[in-house]
Length: 288
Length: 247
Image: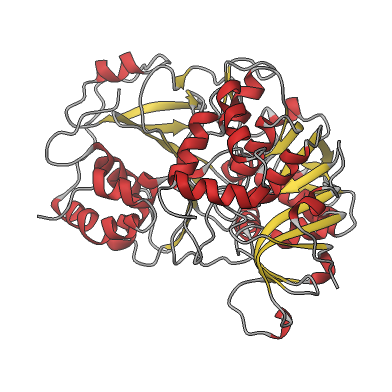
């Protein structure tokens, strides 16, 4: 059985200085969980952005001052463009980036999930990644011929906490997930895994016909009911991304002052997620 | 410069046509995120001369992989992609791309989103066609500020492919593997070599190159019919604005 916690209690499981893996870019991102972390005022997170992620949830944590470093292959907001807080904090020297490569980062998570210390990765040699990532090593391939004599290895990534947003969870922690988000890798690699979910169901999901990928509850430690927990990102089939809110976010995140006002209005205002739901309903021009 | 529409087709329709002509029938072709022009190009190829091309277009409802983006990256890393498309905030004369920073890495003037999977894909796709939606001296440079993905790797490192060239709104370049340089191959209709020279951050030695063959009537019909519909499922705004409707 996976215990069912509310958002704030689950957020309290993430200590200051934790290495936190998170996925979801402008689709199915655990943004409600990011807001709960920001409300709690967690500090010095080393965030691992699991591809293809790195959108609003991570950018919000950066802007709220919760993040010490970001390890990522990309920090973007899909068709909305750049992540403003990420960009600004790096340019101001306030945030350390540990640039990675999608394929190698996913391999590094897989290595952790397999109990291995590192993973070889193709490409990369001849690029500037090797200049900025001294922990990426070039080794002699013990099994290669002259054309494949050298290869990069990257260290396993074993996050302290992994978090993602699911369509549904059951009481065993089994979850139905978005097919592109590499949830199984994230869950297998992380020491403590928190799943926020649109709904928590009574039936056993392993015994239910399904079209969505299922990740076993053996990997999941805590389930958090979070209806509309991806907002302002969307959940395919349930609700679209809230474009108006995302544009408001992007404008606010262009500067410290305006982002502080955003946090006051949407994150730190009394009433938590319930107040947030009311507030964004108003902003989008319909009743909450 | 962004290139001007000559009236009978848009510059994106021309670029998509150039891209389509690179696709060979039966090969496996992938298109990454935020790449509407390559997406239009590969759909156009499949509609015309490459009906057996296997397409992996990010965001397409018919995208076949369901086991995370890792399934795609594993597939690419083992060398199963024949043709891929990359762009960059900067592309240099050597075919290197930069998706990381403008200026110094430690204290950049501009921090960009990052390289995603390009540092592997550039090496492991069979061919990589570079594209750039603006052609100016800021973006086409002698040397990139950061090599996110490179056109060459040192000896003894497995590499499948090389650049297949570069297409911009003004011109086409091919990659000279001996000299390790991009070379001007053709200028688009209505564009002069001097305009291309003035807008390019490296010295172009090539002279009197031919004109890029414009889209044929058949290519435009396909682009504005079935291709526009397919692209519109992923990039509705682009399809509506940059691919013209059939009359």
